[in-house]
Length: 451
Length: 147
Figure 1 (cartoon, each protein chain N blue to C red):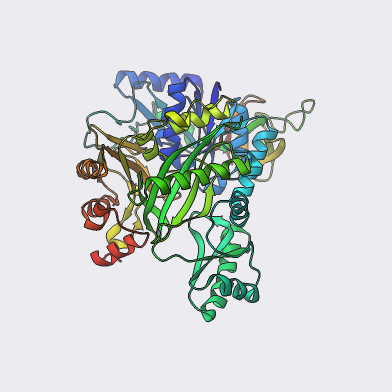
Figure 2 (tube, rainbow over the protein chains, first blue to last red):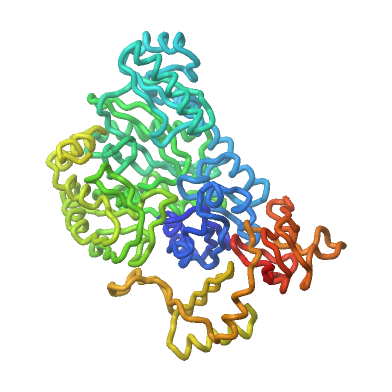
């Protein structure tokens, strides 16, 4: 087992990783930017070192500084968290060449799954149903029109080097297709440094359901069920839950089987998530694989009683997977609300600033994964996630009841938060019914008159 | 800032029951925190913020002295080297005059030897870091008497 791990991240996930390390008796090294001097992860880690100025490019994304910090503290492994360098194959390669274990899959697998068009090809090879679309990159209008003839409108144009819901454009007609293609290519170049795009069938109001997997380096792999992440705004997840209220046991069997086939096909190691879209008839198709731990790993942990971060560390340390699919059993229902420093009544405008005072929920079946504290200054340089509120219940109805109660206890003074949005959703009949797709948030925002 | 000055501050903290002391002046920043001071994550919430206590300098003479010092700080995390190679003389020593473009040291990261410039004019008073020691971003490397 590792003696010392460096956490190449910040905020709530850095705290999460430090917690797992502490429980495993592993020493922790935090890296931080100038803006994060007083951040919780810096205070909780055994050692901390300032690696750069506030901008991500000069700190959390600056590979030489992170590798140097790893060298100074003689760490054996680096946990990249999510975002930042978590799916940077180049960084994973450098870790390898510096003989520091990167806690995640291999650089080759990261690269392969990071190329969204290639990941779809891999899924097809594994016999996983994929969303109808182009077979790889679409270079121009002529190719695009040929694809559309086959799959029909509406279609969505996506950046091959993209992901996380960015760099996507929808088209319903030939005229729209031409401009959408050009704009998508330009945006992809600007955002990801690569103008390559591919085309997929666009599903109206689909559900987003993903499967959590864990695999060790010896070929053992398990799934830990699904998460439903259909409550999204502009392709950013706001609420996640496990299990999905939409799928039947037979659909679950088919999806988890497909997920494990993909794991085997690409030789995936460590924690990962296979994302699917479900149409109104509950047909599912693969859209992408996230080769990292995810924000919403928490709901899976609450339902399956597994510490995914510890499992990641164990797998990276070369241990055999301790979980057996036959003994993995879900228990109850968990919901997560992402609490952001954003004002729902003002177009979800980000609101960095000083948290003058906060009081966080507690009690049975409530979990809070957060780095905030009274007096904490939320910096403007990074994402707006303040923390995650997770509620568990023996069934979905009870979990919703717990979440409503917990949201009432979530008090933050000084910055606006999305707590009011979550309170509204937890009481919304459509959310309670379990029957909603990823347009749900847009409807809520419209009905509430929020910008 | 030398050890004596730090001892004086620590004594001041004890005498006045301070858990934290932070001083920032002329490019130097020193923060002293007692082990018991932790963020109130699980403690009973209190209305005041967790901002560190800012105390005045220990003596008037010290304040006068501090006023004329500037600091060359590290622009990156890395290993500090006083000389271009193990056999060479150091780039600068106490008493040397520097200008903005004078290379004062090397900070190494991932085998790249980055030459660090003074970025200010003055006379080197003290080299603050030992050769081959690691430094973090923003760490003071040289105390300089500004021109």
